[in-house]
Amino acid sequence: MTPMTEVRIAHTADLDAPALDAARALLDEAFEGDLSDHDWEHALGGMHALLWEGAELIGHASVVQRRLLHAGRALRAGYVEGVAVREDRRRRGHGASLMSALEKVIRGAYDLGALSSSDEALPFYAVRGWRLWEGPTFALTPLGIARTEEDDRGVYVLPVAARLKVAGELVCDWRDGDVW
Image: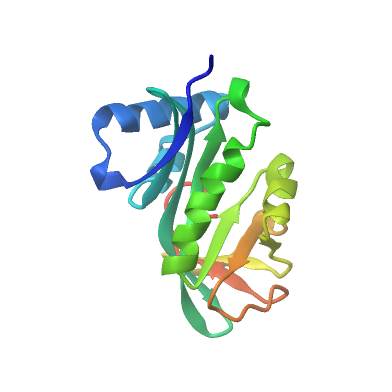
């Protein structure tokens, strides 16, 4: 008999080293070794949704605060990072459970949600009400605003309180590694 699954929400500061190590290991496996130290760092400092099956971690997602610039405003964005479900537990609604927990946080605390997605995950987010950002993307770098064409059509937003023109420009704050 399979143990019950439970999504637990916790801030990075409230997670102990074994939970963080389990999350990092899960993401390393799910992303097939393509998770950089920067990618892991991007997932820290906010709220984590951890999906446990008994004492075993089988899913992770997190939301961190970022600033996005749009239509002359600096918006407080809940940016989703590190979404993964263990391969042998996929296609059972676990990703939806993780995202539901994070979307509750986003709706309660941010102007909008945002994320950058792999091509294969785009339909998953679209079904949940996330909207493709249709306009050009940029990053506010140490040298000024720079175009990020490679990220066009890969950024999704979840409108909450901010009025968004999804065909307009969207600028993200700077960070090491992948900016989106």
